[in-house]
Every structure is written in C-alpha cells, then in structure tokens.
Image 1 (tube, rainbow, N blue to C red):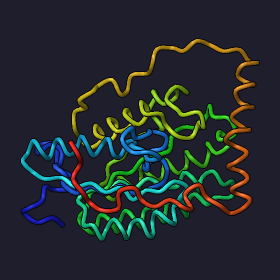
Image 2 (cartoon, rainbow, N blue to C red):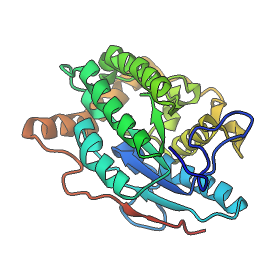
Image 3 (cartoon, rainbow, N blue to C red):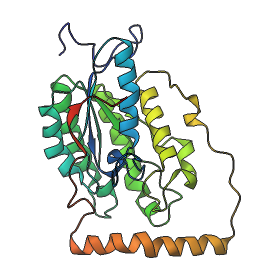
Image 4 (cartoon, rainbow, N blue to C red):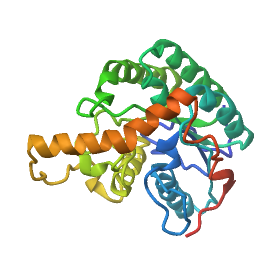
Length: 277
C-alpha cells in the first residue's frame, strides 16, 4: 500500500508511531472547531483537529519533513455529506492521514438507522485506506448527563461499538471520546452544551495524539478538573430553562425549516497548507 518513501500508515510497536506530512480533517462542527474561537481570525474556530495538526507538524519538523494540513469540516453536516463530498475532497489532496468524524448530527434524529450509518462510515474508511492514507476515527461522547440529548445515548452507544469494530477491520486509529472522563465536566463545554471549550479541544487533541502512539507533551489531558461547587436543583432548573430557550429552541426551529447552521459556511482550510509557527 505504501512505497519506500512513506512511513507505514499503521506502524508496528517496534518502529514507533508514524510520521505524517499531509493531514486532512473532515467532519462537522466538532472538527471545524466550534466553540474554540480563533483569536487571530474573526468568526473562525481553532479546534482539536487544528491543535492535533500542530503536534503532528512538530513531529514532522523534528524529522526534517515538511507538513501540510487541510480542514474540510463544516458545522451541521450529516454523515452523507461527510462520507460523500468531503471524502472525495480529502482524497483529491492525496493525504497520508485523514480524520473522519461524523454521524453525531444523524444520531440526534430519533429515527436514525445506526447500522446504516456505520455501513456508510465503513465504506468511507475502506476507500480512504485503499488510497494509502491512515485513518483516525472518533467515538461519540457519552451523553448520559446531557439534558434532552441523553435520549440518544442508546444510539450513540451502538454507533460507538460499530466504530471500534470498523477500526479493527481496517487498521484505523480511534479517538475514544466515550471513555474520556475529563469531558464529563460541564466546564469543558460551551454554553450550548454541544461544543467544547478551548480547554476541551486542547485535551481532545492530546487524546488523539496519544491514540496515534505519541507521548503527549502535556500529560494532563486525561486528568479531570478539581470538583466544582454543587448547585441547587433550582439553579440547575433555571440554567436548563435558559439553555432550552437560547439553544434548543433555535435548533428545533432550524430542523422544522429544513435548515442547517452550516448552510452558508464553507470549509475554513480547503487545501493542504503549512501551519504558521
């Protein structure tokens, strides 16, 4: 699958982790980076994939190799969009690593066919692997404590099981978000309770880096924050009501209108370009 000029996409433990030079990230708002605001560019997000790219670029640089990164992810995208146009766009860039994270928006729909979603994801993984690229998948987070969203826990768990099986069959890496204890703290999440804070994205990037066989430069990523002060039931109910008005209701209204938050958004980094150091 790889010639002598490439490091094997899934190296043995004896050879250590691979050195990647062409990384393409595809997916939805999670991979676009919401809500990790980019201080250098208005209305743009950084996110875990951008942060992972920084770590991978450093490894490439230490081995005297150039590094290019593209991010084709767009908020609101369903798996059909990711497994279709985004996969094709990534393949056109001839990457040696692709992270594909999708299905979360589909899972929120009560009638979602999880087995069909998994089959579509596996087709994409097979296509990417056949190109010679390594693949990084990610499980959903566990929504067991999330208001409203916890109703999707069974679907998310089934999809998570599929992802581990797909990864095993196709020799892919897995970013385990379901088992990431640190993310069970609401301080890691933005006010919308759907997207991560900058700290959450930082930790996820280090989790991904570790899942690919590297030693995380900041080993605190898996350590939960100190316990937060408890709030009363009244305060919790008030916060839940405010969240529903500010975030849940607009989301439901977009669903009824057949609209997506990403309808007017395009990929923030459509080509493989070097990172600014």
